[in-house]
Image: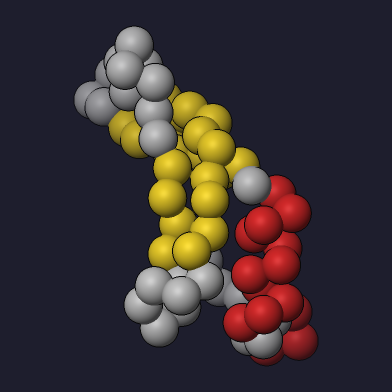
Length: 64
């Protein structure tokens, strides 16, 4: 997705703060027949990797 320079936020602590405030994401996938979307809780590990790492989970019963 194109993000115009005037709208970009590249300050990692600011981005991490936004992620921690939301603490929720969506996984979207497509099959030949339809799209599927599932909301998942997320935890941010700021210390893993260069940018941090997101950890989330699907319920076992989720068909996606």
